[in-house]
Length: 386
Image (cartoon, rainbow, N blue to C red; front, side):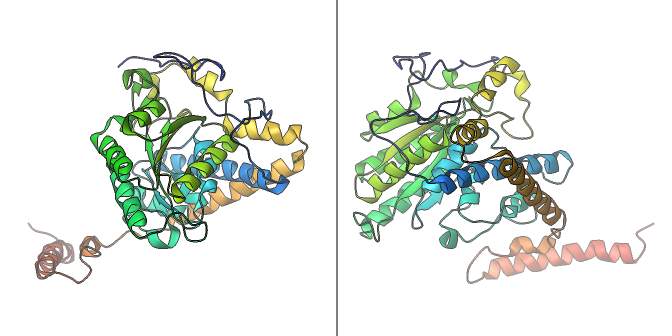
């Protein structure tokens, strides 16, 4: 493993080849200054900007609590979103009610935007259930652990949307968004999804969160061209957005989804961001990257950036920021209490929710399991064997 990936140069650097700096859509500088863009803009009122800031703070606080729970042995594993909050909140708030989301296992911020109880994914990582929620109710599919598989699911779903005639109309049109990481872009499933989506003009937005590392491999070891340029080879548009700029992410994603909804087919968004923490809590990022790189990205922190903007525009004061922090802490405390109170499942429950109408074979296996389990109960009651 090599230690350290390339740092991004200034946002206006030319994107002319391998190792060159990123040129991306940006509406808010790291210092919190609004910058105009010829194609993209946002029209939030003051309350809208404040709500975005609240979202960013809350999901980061929930994520930190989940990490702490794992370190204390209460979760088996956790995939942190630290540093990627703007990419998730910006795109999550750009969704319209009818749009369908296909996540990986890290889209906790998008899940929050869809109104799903934040305890739900922790139930999965605690091992008390399969992380089930109703995808139809929330328009948010279940977490996908298999890398890149969700892009094929999303493409198939989007093809169904097209065949059902649910494109081209603001009132009934639907779009689909599939999340994946820079590492997943090398998977065959993702490239096959690109082919199918392109050929069938499916209304799907492929949203790549390029957090610079596929576990321990930096982006320079994954591709010789910027990821968003791959879209051209499949026949649909791609662009790169500053993934730490929640306003730019919102604007870019909203337009891409609207284009898909109106029958203009698929597109690829590369959100250029950074994973501030470990890939998962079983990973040690100090083995493959330098602390100086992390510090450089901290200057681009999405929350600090939006707070600087709110300060500059006098949209919020110190008391309001303090209240946001207090509210986020209360939400995190509630999350902890409810996770610790989750009951352990009965072992026999693993036979539930397998077939919608039951199965004779499954019934027989359940009975065998119950008889096997009863042997342990009988041994405990009888005092064991000599």
